[in-house]
Length: 480
Image (cartoon, rainbow, N blue to C red; front, top):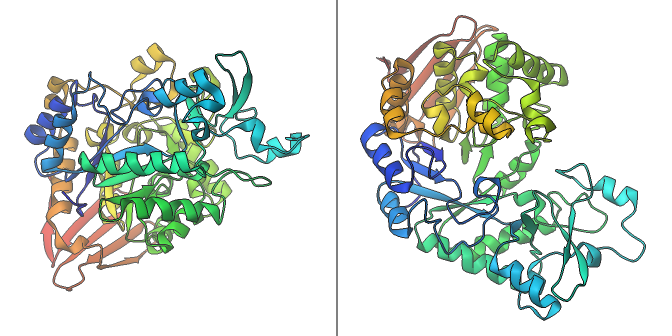
């Protein structure tokens, strides 16, 4: 299938049932027309980070199923797969061959040497301080070759995730071959995970390095020409995704989650209206993902005081949301994300939560809904404490029986109706228009109209009272 302007579900292969086969059954039997696409989070054999340390892109991890299961899913839904353009597992055959043979390995140039990257006498403390890091130390890992020699390799993320040298011919061939293989297996969109970290350059902060990052993106685009779309993943200031949008690519809206929380906490609509007016149509919107709620993404849309207010309010009104869940105690040093489900961030309040999803549906772009969010899931404290992994608070494993029970809850039933409405309503045409006004400090009116101007959908909402009304061509629409 090709990419469609329909709601995309984000899910692990074993989060809605035990495997891809059961996931397909859940989607077909329980979610009706609410879902049009699926971002199937990494389903390859992996050695860490719940799939994001891939060992082999040619395989489906056997506990999840096989390529036939993936292709069956793709017959009904357009699909997005992840490609970790920055790194690969140190248990991959490429890395093991390099470790065994050193410079004689065919894959020696696949990995980025920390030692060879720096001129003699460097890196200095200033060099390391300049790097945009995900760790509290220099981003390298020392390896020992079979002959006893040692070398440091770039290692931005976890120990299992060794960085690739995207400038080498070996890596570029690996990228091209892998992406085309994934598209042949049913990927309609490739999500370039950790894209902004992929290019490293001397005397830069090694994050979204220009102009080299554009050369990389152009190569990937050429590799996928006629095969599939690209979605670069960047969690940072909104100006970076905007640059990518200006080049005609799909982007993520990671600003909306914090701005929506601020608006619903404060009852004020001005900042939300400002953001909706700025946002490109060629984007995927989010309120929740498999990671935490991004804070840094909303910087300069929300003021520092508004970001601080939202964060503190989240801890005050959020259900079982505690600062320690986003700390080193729970293996999370990313100070720019808060770990919680979106439903619990809103105090497990059905009315506020449904209004948040309404706002997302009327925002520019294609809505992405995380599987826990689709079922209005509460924070999973049991899984969190069992694993001591902060992000697992938002990664509950649903059995088929649980799904069947959850969809009967009024808030979930209404949400499924809302998403079905979004999928079939022509007013949400990506080539159409959006008009946003604020009649008062707490009110917002969002009007979406298709390019042909034959369909108009209008949301009128009061964020203080949580009252709302939806009309299409002046006819009232309800979701109860």
